[in-house]
Length: 196
Ligand code: 5GP
Image (cartoon, rainbow, N blue to C red):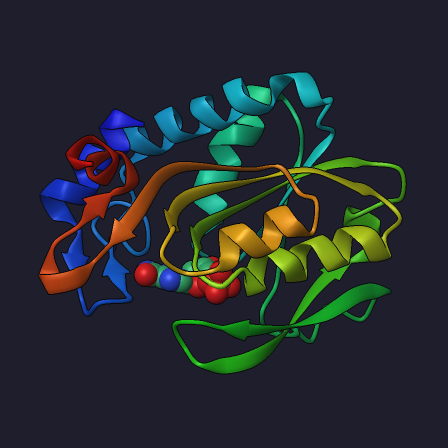
């Protein structure tokens, strides 16, 4: 998605060879117009899958999930990373190891917001080693619903999450795929393909 790649090139900050910071449009400040375009692209890609619900993880998945949900006309649910005192109802739980925080969080969603028999689109901001997406998929499967696909805003294709999710049988669609962050430079998968 060219608009997204342009934003990554223009304002993305390469923190090291493994981490990209995009807090000026996705992870802290949010660019609503760009998020609308991201949601429209997810909707275009998954419109034929019969999606009935979107599941994401707080907090950075919420903006792209919301715009995709608006476009597809389905509810958006975000799994919580911290158990809240008011969450005293029946819930599904799973453990997710966080790539950026290097800690394991228990991720929770209330059963009433993830009923059985739904066709769920999982959305997240980044794909690194696939832990977050696999955790969300586990919640969907616990609910006896099915995962119709996984939509990722930015995939770091040099990490193994994409391969893991595809091996597990999931359809994965990433709007920007980064081949390398070496030397402080963002190289997209397509850029490298053109060089070869
Ligand atoms: P995974 O679970 O696939 O290993 O990592 C994905 C999760 O870690 C995403 O939910 C995202 O919040 C975070 N993450 C992974 N890599 C990056 C990165 O390069 N930059 C930022 N901002 N977040 C990342």
